[in-house]
Length: 133
Image (cartoon, rainbow, N blue to C red; front, side, top):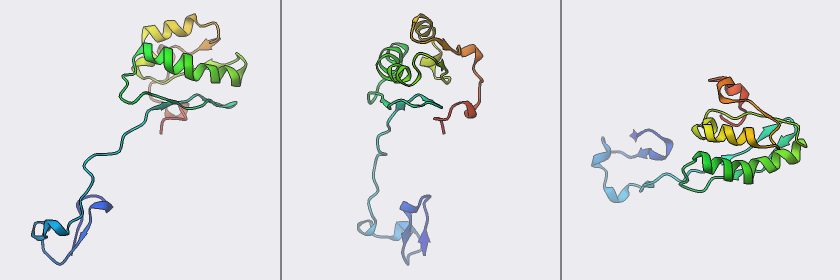
């Protein structure tokens, strides 16, 4: 008899009628926690892609973190290298992307020639964002 508790990893093959009749010593122990997640950011265009920018584990992605770490130290140098200052910058709707501080930061940067402001973003268009699956 087979007991299926939801995933392939949880299947038990035995000749008893219920899982509770099986000796606990004979059951495999599952893992108690899921593996850690990783948050990354990348810029993608027809010219190529930047290097991946890994977020600090457990970091709260505030406007300050996004502008200082992700954009200034991570994405913008790669974008400038690929585009020679000729690009249109578009983000998706994460709170740190939409914040007044981030928009002000992008407006003030001489090396960001043009960007699409949040009020002009398409609300639900996965076709415009090739990185989100």
